[in-house]
Image 1 (cartoon, rainbow, N blue to C red):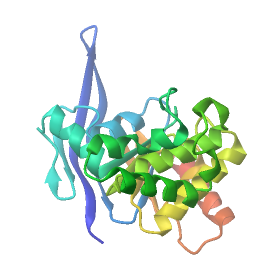
Image 2 (spheres, rainbow, N blue to C red):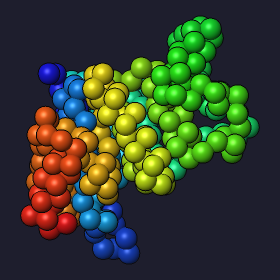
Image 3 (tube, rainbow, N blue to C red):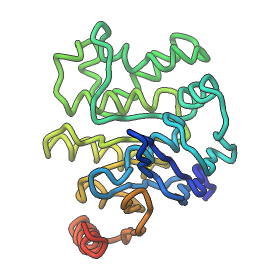
Length: 250
């Protein structure tokens, strides 16, 4: 499998009241095509900062990030924005959507912004994604008239509309109840089985156990890496992960 994301010696420091806070400390890892990588760790360990840095949403002081073989280090904000729009997909805990647009129009928005496809093709792609994720019936609904689980599945559709090479998700189930969380994770794991590459931040071992690799972050450094057994039952995968997290100091 080819490497989609390569992170080398990544470091980031905030200075607050003349005190330096080393949020990321020499982080190294790779994400290969078809992997589903979870980032876990205590609160304040740098999980979200890491995701934002490697996806070009946040800056970093030193190190290098290579996406599909090309360094994003030093790219202009305009080029980073274009890269994120066309080659990356994003899913957040807070489901940012425009209230004056229907669910379908929110999903179509990134493709319309990219401006590379005819309107009919964009519409057909959006409708097909909604059908695939089981929410075709809410296409014309207001975003305030649907459930949290439905809205997060719509966000997954939106993240896929430009056929990105990789998806980034920051606590994608964090604002959902357990039933909705399970539904959303089922969709994400299904996408992964179909070949999608994902990196997600989560505090939930049940969510992380569905991934193919787990990175454990402590004080901005990767303390350990766990690879669930692919053919193990969900219960055994969760138990093995929980045992490993205890070893890590969870």
